[in-house]
Amino acid sequence: MNCLSLSRRERSKVPYIVRQCLEEIERRGLEEVGIYRVSGVATDIQALKTAFDTNHKDVSVMMSEMDVNAIAGTLKLYFRELPEPLFTDDLYPSFAGGICKVAEKESVNKMSLHNLATVFGPTLLRPSEKDSKIPTNPTQPISMGDSWSLEVMAQVQVLLYFLQLETIPTPDSKRQSILFSTEV
Image (cartoon, rainbow, N blue to C red):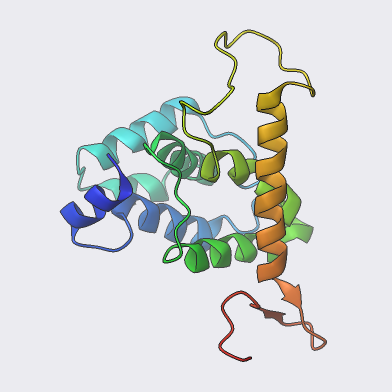
């Protein structure tokens, strides 16, 4: 289901699965080494996805008992399974802000902006399936010269660029958004 349909059904701008996962990750995952990069247990990710899909009432209890990497994996899976990539003007500031919160704890979680762009670039900036040159055989090795590999590398660099613009440090060491500043 696309994000707009889900948001309308839930009567919310941000889908419940996204809100819940991000809140839990911000609550206890910002200092987790490799957050978003370390894979969660596949059965936990699938169980959490099923709970969200079926409007399971105990999702928050389930999440509080689950490894935070499985929650991050569920969020990445949700984004990956969207029919179209998610990168809208309305959602970008919140997304970039959340990513920057993770990057601010890089000394603990080892997730630099580059690492985060590597994880999210191909998920959020993917080309449509009809335009993509993704190998048809999933066991086929991918070389650095493959057009698909080059697309992925370009997507990572685009997202890294936007995240770096979003988090340019000011002289007083505070991060300041230059993309959404109201000052001229």
